[in-house]
Length: 425
Image (cartoon, rainbow, N blue to C red):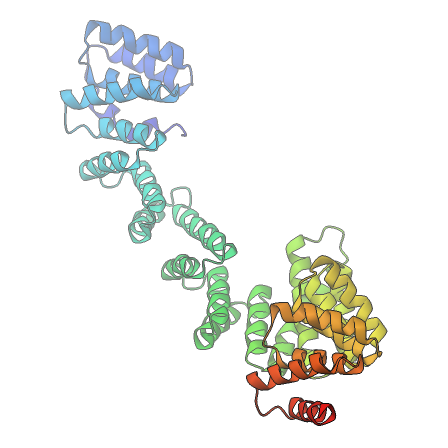
């Protein structure tokens, strides 16, 4: 705790035969000479054990020496002498605070504020306790009062605390809790860009796109170049299939990063945002069947993180649709080295092997992929075709029949199933 002795309002009432001794003890205390100040107050209390000011100041000295048991004893004795002394409540409250007895501390701070409602030191401590108890409305009220006095930018500190807690919940995928924190920030500061952007991201993740765009559009009205808001809005457009709008937002992100990317002092956050924007651009191009452009974006993303599993898998997929099957297998192998049980990568590699007439390798990949997605009709049909090419007709028939159980009107499965049935007859 910092030195807040002046916040005790203790010296307004000095009219004491020991005034000189108390002043000297206080000087020692204020200079951090706690042993000397303790000796001074002990001398006074040996003469008069009920000297209220000496008791409180000695309690503060004990507090500074982290001797909380003696600090509490002096605070309690001071309150026996004068049950309405605010300084005694503050001393006992902050001692409880340091002992993490927050309920007891809160009771004392409330009593101190009943006596002096504008004590900024006590308001800050009480606000901190409300934060620990997650009573954000009460904390907000205390910090709003403090902000009028501009005490240590108290309201901004409160907002920063909420931002930190919100981001912590977000990183743990506790989205509802994160949303509570961000909405509380927006109650205080409706134009907070970070809160608006993360609210938009959370709403987008939960499929609440109207609310997502309300928050993200507002953030971009405040700052049209805000990278986080542009990235999240681009992602939301992508999820809705509005690829051209998504592409436009992500282009703005990339424009801001192009010049900074090769700066040796570039932050990890900027690199991460750049790579994310590149990956989304690639996904857009992939969905629009612009496979060569897809690969161009993915190469740039791989320059930043050559081990990004999503990018490697997507690269393999783009090469597959360009019918460059060997290149597809190279990138899918890299992806599967890091994530051997990725069904998408297994399926794509199986397809590429199938197209190269490597039916045994294709069969193995389809077999592994179906462990994770046993009702994937496309995988069942392709595994059936692989069996067929290996002349394992009965196993092929079983795969086509299973596909028809899931999707009875699948033409490919019907054709092959009927063909095998008549050939076996």
